[in-house]
Length: 331
View (cartoon, rainbow, N blue to C red):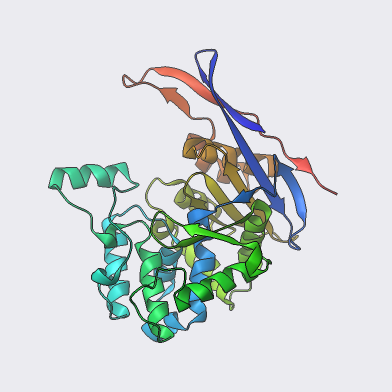
């Protein structure tokens, strides 16, 4: 279903289909748009469950990883100096090296960082990957279970077998009901129904603080700058809600949110069909408006993303993004 339309002048330039699933504290579908059961690759939105699998190995306690380290494991960072420094510190804590990483360097998500790299003629190495925190955690997890570091990223590695079991359990599916592919960072990445992604984040929001999922919630909401970076949607959203909301984007326009509420946690998952991240952020902002999540003041933190104007290279406004998302209720 069409959730947003991009206009150039008064002419339609693009239309964008999306799907939304909202579940309650029991995993029951409350609201939807499009197909809430669309099989979806959450990409980096699945990182908290992958981090959960690493936690189950005992690696965090063995190597002294703190909540900030855990936040970076769950994050898709902007390759800011603080992100790279923390990833290197995690490798040092686990007594592994950057040479052991099986993610590659790439241009950073942050435009400011990219400009700095160009000025310095800097070539990114694996620790600069936006997924380096996850990979550092995976190396620590492999070491904690006595598995080889070599091949830790491969689907048949003992650590990835654990990740697959944990992932399926976290979304209340059998292992056979989760499909797997290879992510951009070279690790296995799951695919399952969109409402199951919402269910995962509902569980994170509902988890008591003394549980692994509760610690993931605390880590991500206490360190939103490590989950994304300055000016990024995830960071601004979690900062605005001050611990009441945990959120994470995934490549190619998937998004997941867990909301803590006195009347019970909510899980929200969104997928934009054409992978457009600007449309994704706008749709998520409108979904929060429609659901009445938080206060109007909290949601104003997303104003720059909600209906972004389209401008050309001279700064002239050429069009607008019109979001027409609605949410159907389910009995």
